[in-house]
Image 1: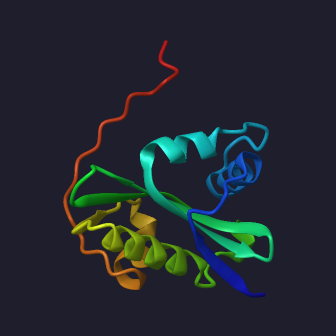
Image 2 (image 1 turned 120 degrees about the horizontal axis):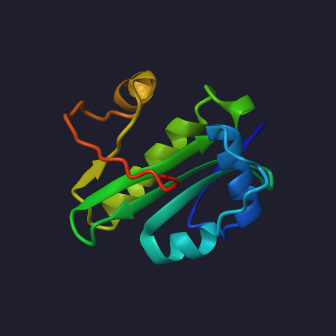
Length: 137
């Protein structure tokens, strides 16, 4: 298997939605308008491809200045732990740096600390989070 990392690839909403659903346990029937969302809000995005098949993804949002934010890092479940995520994050960080960003932020759950801190070089920080569920009754 040869993986190719491609910044700002042409997004197929169905393929990316499927990858996202498999990686995060979502509904595979739901197709998100990723291409429009990324074009409007992202500094860049990076895909990992096994031939023509999307095997991984990460997007880089930003504040228009010095700060970039990694979001939606996903690798096909059967291909995890093979270096694809590390290659995606490395490419995303390089893209943010090339765009003039001085800081790249990422939030992650505790079970991903080894990946982001040890493999990708992110320093531990204290952060805050507020959640506003969309299906409140």
